[in-house]
Amino acid sequence: MSSPISHLYLPYISPTSPLHLPRCKRLHYELCVATRAEAARRKLAAVRGLARLYGALKESAPAHIPEAVPFVAELLEDSELEVLGRCRGDVGEV
Image 1 (tube, rainbow, N blue to C red):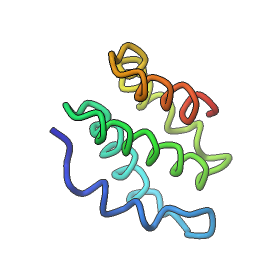
Image 2 (cartoon, rainbow, N blue to C red; image 1 turned 90 degrees about the horizontal axis):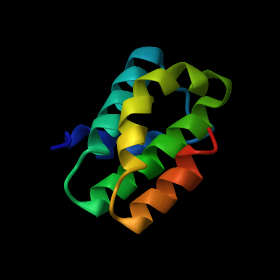
Image 3 (cartoon, one colour; image 1 turned 90 degrees about the vertical axis):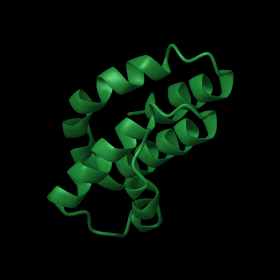
């Protein structure tokens, strides 16, 4: 089950907000863990959060990809077509 912390960070992710490294690393991990939720809605929210985070990080985003690979690999095998499509679209851009 994912931590309730990750959804609290999402309103603060924007291209104009500064992301400090410790906060960013924690947020990234929480969003990755949230991709393993049972509910498709939570998985979709986590994928959207990762996409927004990567968009805000810009050039720094690739530094977080190694941590996300196992989580994204699981999403690419998800039985929910909406989750699969969102993962391929949003996270696949990175």
